[in-house]
Image (cartoon, rainbow over all chains, first blue to last red):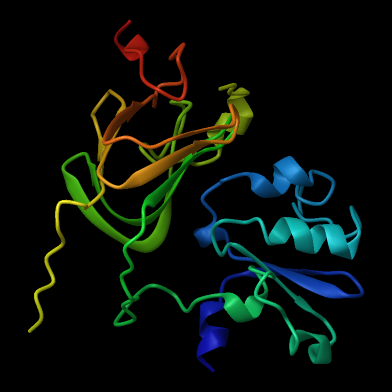
Length: 169
Length: 63
């Protein structure tokens, strides 16, 4: 199954009701998860997700905030997964196949969304051209995260350093 | 083949070496810290962390 392929290399965390999936390479450190729910999502802890830290309802709410597809969730009871509403944005059934290979997404015209994350990076989403260090990258219906603190080891991209240096801004 | 070239509405994000991020074209800037929303044709955003006018560049990186 194609979906299983897109789930390779990811981690799972479960409580009695739901399973949360985390795909590290898709994370752009937008930081919604730990800002909203540090008791569950704590990057300084290993494992960094503690499903006992909050109610299932709250965990779902915060996973749905993740602007990338790094975090996704599903009910453990498969019957309940059949009636998922569109508002459950990060339910696993809405996760797109990898944007690689011959899987070219449809290009839509809408303004690019540039979000300034509190004490964190710029999260840029949509269709745009990114020029950096002599590279030209066409970004299509996707997302990049640009460092604002100046401390990233992967400039111009965010690598989560803003947390370690206590960046305010 | 269909004509695929975009019009001038293309959004370009340019990382200036040792400088700010320049964004031009069709975009909306939402600042979740200061709760503001900006749309303009061109902005320059701080990448060094030192600006006194965040999220915008104030050339503090040159100091």
